[in-house]
Length: 297
Length: 53
Image 1 (cartoon, rainbow over the protein chains, first blue to last red):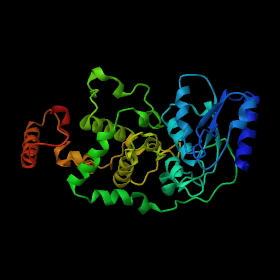
Image 2 (image 1 turned 135 degrees about the vertical axis):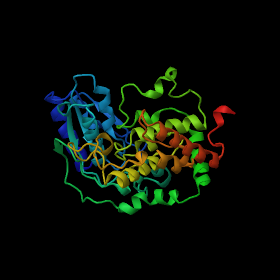
Image 3 (image 1 turned 90 degrees about the vertical axis):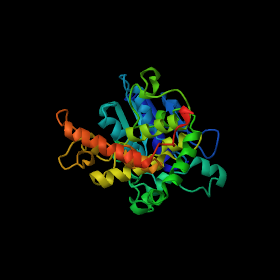
Image 4 (image 1 turned 180 degrees about the vertical axis):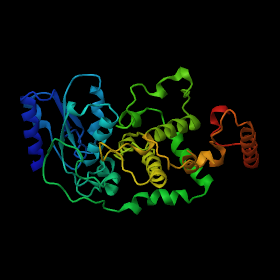
């Protein structure tokens, strides 16, 4: 058992026994060595289920949404990227700051469960999101477990958008062909939406079939309509936790769209990383007189 | 949105967004004429027509 796991259990037991929180959300060891699914613990004696290892990839911030209409207080373990999710939820007024007790874990990077299943536990590569990650240490926390790790992405800013830039240079019809193959696979299970901390509308527009936002027809055009709408909906609020892509049962490269939009926002509105600062409004949530206005020429 | 459409391989010119006030009839006519010219040049859209076939 590693040091952080011990600290997690200790911290969780303490706040549960003092009744400071109603329950704690963390990770446990599941059926597979290469997966650490989320666990919800409400009794002090159960804290030994909590663990921390390189497979704690799930972003637990999204589970705060289950509590948005209640008076519960939740203890939450966060990695660097997850803490940005919490910041976003607080900024979006989804969760009051005092209703969540944040226990931060400095994260050296986690491993992709699918790749790990193939490559084996030791050889498994880091998840894609961790290669570009610039906030390994939590940005918002009540208590931090363990020593802070060295910041800075493993690949650098250019590498982060390299795939996007390459793809943009391709022929228009090639791009269409690539994406239609992706969209054709979508089964509209809404896993990407349910797991996304930026997708926090109480009622989703895609669940109102009668108003005509979207037909129930599952096919290329309507799937594309759904995926692009969702991509633009989380624009400027996506924290690049990559959960949508991980949850997708048909492996649609959703992060490629999200990263493209992040790149555009950086070019149009100046460099911005979502969820780093509680005080800073997202670029698409405020108006500046020098905003680009391509539509008004 | 134009950028995103281009990214997924739809001709971005098919979407045009312009700011026209209700009192700017000349500008409205001009905008539409321009837009139809662009669309005529592009021809009918053959992409994403699956729901109508």
